[in-house]
Length: 506
Image (cartoon, rainbow, N blue to C red; front, side):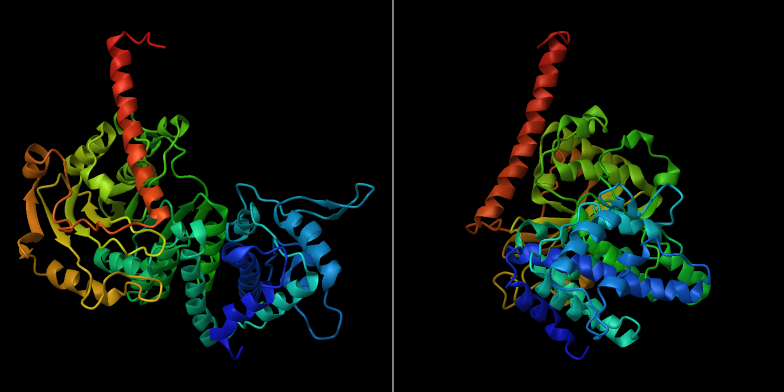
């Protein structure tokens, strides 16, 4: 394909004319499932080459070459025929449903997945479980398919180049409504992966992996150490991901396939729906890299999977507990959390921080500028680096200020990996710093954090605390975070009252 850079624009220009597409979020979701099938088809060609007895899980009529590929003979499906096939055969079959005629005779069997189905095959049904087909014009759908079919994933250079194009698609999600919550800026994921220093043979996990940014950054960093076929095998099996929502799950699987992973161990599931006390060493990982969802308020059925003292209503708090229960002895973690976690004083937050400091070594907290996740949110976030090597003795805090010449990050001026250079320089030569009379880098003992500061980890923050006027969605997210914290405090007080009344309170 000669014009990869214009790929997204070409698709957007075609799809703007389709009455079924409403906005960028739907447009990108529509592109996503077609791209997945195109990439999966290229992978299957490789697997067929390598394995004589390889059998596709996708029935023959639904294989890309038999309905999407246009050989220019004039026989390619288009118009109403194409729409009918996609809506009434392709989607039901890939979701696992049989397609029958009016007499009940099975025309095409839906794909079947069980516990013994290999991951690389099972991902097809998982990817399409809740996928949507929005387009209503079969002629325009044919045009979109033809643009996607021009991609040549057998060409290494083109495949690699498209990996970069795919990254721009993920970035566009960031400003396409709520879908942006699944995308962490690549500069941030790359920085965290670098500082965690991956080793061949280690297993890394992300329990809310979104579009797979941390998984890709981990693989990119680990790739530098691959020296043999044994290393390559360990590299390919080094990641584990869980994503609750179907759309980012689909994007993540495609992302990993594009980056050469034949068996993406990523599961369409909710990491909060299992009792944390049931986890054993087999469920633990050497490394956890995460940006947990925050601002959400979880129901009692979710909180019941956690010990009473850790059962927060706030989603990010619960993920912190999952991380602590699933990190191996001597394991390492880097986790993004909002300011609310650092200064939160409700019962569950304090207990989570007690567990973190008493059972783990919280050695570094990096305070990030509020606009790192712009334009999705301006809520200020932090990176917590900790390991399971024993209780915390001391914790360093470092405030990363905006780079010179920037007032804030934006879609056109995003954060770059180079902007973390001051952190890297300081990390390797730690010292306390002040700027304009405010602490920029400072070391605290565990005793100071617990006894003197009462588990308030809000240290070396921004002097003016980013008091800019927030966008409406940012205000909503901030209020949601505060409400979740307040709900948890109310739950605690009600529990205490119930206990005082002997458990008989209605």
